[in-house]
Image 1 (cartoon, rainbow, N blue to C red):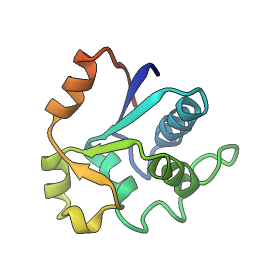
Image 2 (image 1 turned 30 degrees about the horizontal axis):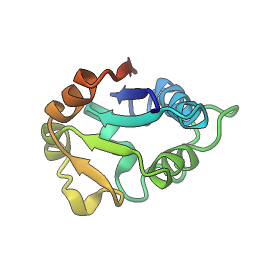
Image 3 (image 1 turned 30 degrees about the vertical axis):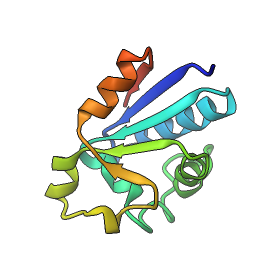
Image 4 (image 1 turned 60 degrees about the vertical axis):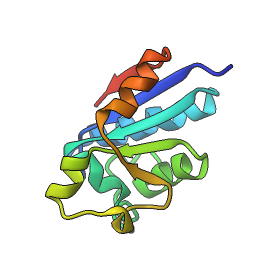
Length: 120
């Protein structure tokens, strides 16, 4: 059984730490970890349809769009904080397919199952 990892991302387009977070998330996939993402604050912007496509925060990492899409394509759980989405006017229709707007209880359930967490 794969070990679980939840990566909490609060950084958006103006902070290179977001690139680090998505890079580490991609590395988790490459390592066979059962990856989930929980997006809060400006981090929710990464999964708005079309938003990450042109972003490239770190020239040594793949593009942000490529890193986000790899996580989506792998079928990982990507959760978005409801108040964070609401404050930006985002609904399910604004977000990439498969992304869910859900409260932190979903993340807490993963932690109770033994998931490790990393926060950026």
